[in-house]
Length: 349
Image (tube, rainbow, N blue to C red; front, top):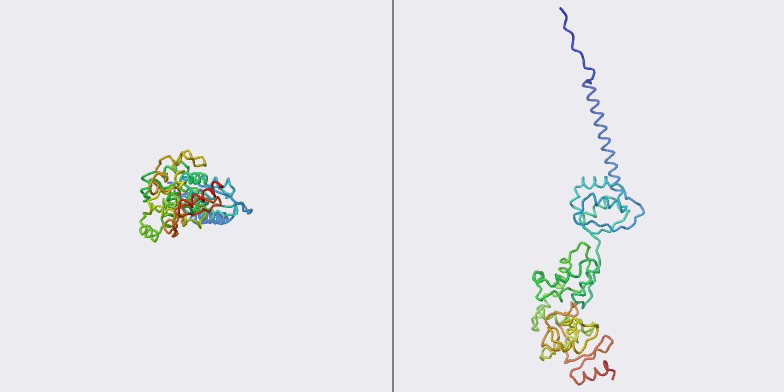
């Protein structure tokens, strides 16, 4: 009878002590790899791609994917490693926080600084200056030239009854309420925001004290804006605004027509730089040689000084003025003296 043989050991299976040792070595290896990776990443996010620090305008388009953003950063020399930057963005959970716009960067920025800037929304701002006395069409051209809005879209919004109503503007258009000022907008600014900002600036400027004054002198805010727009177009000399205003106030009180050339020009489409007799004879809602009182609406966008002059005119008896061709005017209280001034300054007689 054969004796029972002891079980044979499987040479392929390591002993428990050996397994523990292998596992420990493997864990140490993984930890070492992670440590090296973390050290490398720590250095990467702090090290600029180029120490020469060259200025770069970097653009993130609306809806742009992280892959494209990272590729563009690499292409413009702002980061040195595409994959590392994307990994850094993901561990920071920042991919969805990157904001569209233009950013002023330089190649001396670290990836950490770049990501912080991209998520801050601190876009490059462009100066947008609207001089006093420009009308809607002229401002639309300025907006187009600044790359902020097409002229057609700008004018469409400024004449859109629903949008005008949203802004609580009493006119048929936004003429007169686009406050002349220097603004700063990013390229991502949409046309509505641009216009809303300008109207908001008007509302802040035309404060409660001015509203009370308008009521005191029997004018609505819209009336004041119309009158201020005429004052703005009539003189290029700031000191004369209250005097010009006094003439129009005196005429309105006497039910005299304003007879302002700039209002005539605003109401015609064939003005070529010279006002003609046919323009003066043409009946339009803006021809103050033919209609009584104020024209149908503002003829330009007045600044604060013209608005103030419309509310606080100089106390005079003037009813006429004529240009002296040096940005100033000769003021008269009667037609005889006015005609004499016209012969002297306009007809050279």
